[in-house]
Figure: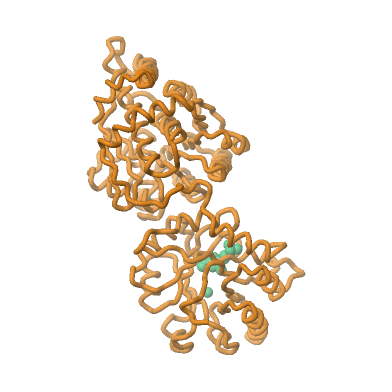
Length: 535
Ligand code: 3NM
Ligand code: MG
């Protein structure tokens, strides 16, 4: 087999410790069983503690098995063992022998893989002629202690996007990959050319620790090749819709919410529950305020959308969010995440990172400092920046950032996460149509919105109603839906604020509910006068 032809799809890394393997099992027996499933495409023998003689003996046995299966065997770290056995190559970590030395010892025809956890390590490995990269650690895992950094799917994606387009290097990711996340990770790590996409997943415990290694590996390969339930139906491409075309679609979207009365499942804080439920009703959705994660699987089947609002974060609350996120991801229903006060405390920064890493967020909505905190949580800026910009409370950002810069930043975030990002402020910015896609700005709204608690959260609720009612999960339908939500919400606020009976934030609230309702009703009746206010 030529090394260029190696299939890295399902890359099994061995572990000989009883904690992973179980006491009675032998590493060769498990690898043999896994190979019998026919799904494993590459094997790495990894034993950090064995004596050299024993390593060579086991590696020889493994090589006989992999040769019979027609897949390559690589040895972790030990170039000498690989040479003794004559297997197909080695895998080296950042603390192992240097790439140049390994190459000199092994020659051009052997496979050398390198572990990388950041862009600098990746670039160095590419320059040094690595054949493939093991990118990680993606998720925290008990299988490896001393993992230098948990990079999440965002970190993985950033490395993939920065691999030089002309590099022939292949890629696998490693760390905590299992049946619960393989499909999502593979989908989130696929990119349009000329960018590199992930070539495979490397797993230890998901196969070595499985009762049925053959079945487990077949299932992993199947998941790897199956888009997750929430993936948009069409291949992603740059959105070319103009603002006028988008405006033209708004009336139908308002009517779609009214006609479908989609469920808006809110996991939100006590302060806003009542107002958010009333806003949902006013725009035509059917609200349920359910903070208990065990309910989410049933609710996710009802065709609505979930809002995770981090307004009151507690350890128990976080567990509930993650259950609900998994349930909605599994049902292919949209999730809106409102990272309230994401940068305000260490607890919220950690919770944001956990939530963003635990599943797919369809729409990420926050004010500028919350979005900044999400960028830090995604590894796109260092955490110190986030701490330096620590928010004063949950209501205010660091000031109006330069709009062009903000637009570029949220587009990068949305591209990385393959989702829609909404940055709210005096002007709201929306993007999510690819790396070269547009950033839409909505200039409507009223200052009273900033004087009433929970109006940001209620915007999240409104967005959830609209994305739930969108025809498909494709950005062609989701982006206009989010824009329609912003226009409905902000124009209703203007209409309410201008009423004679409104004299301040107190009288504004009931008038705002009225106008949310009246905008919907007028649109259903064919009166689109309100939309002329769109800016
Ligand atoms: N290398 P599991 S993480 C061997 O980040 C290894 O470089 C890692 O085990 C890295 O699939 C890891 O059981 C262990 O999570 C992965
Ligand atoms: Mg190593």
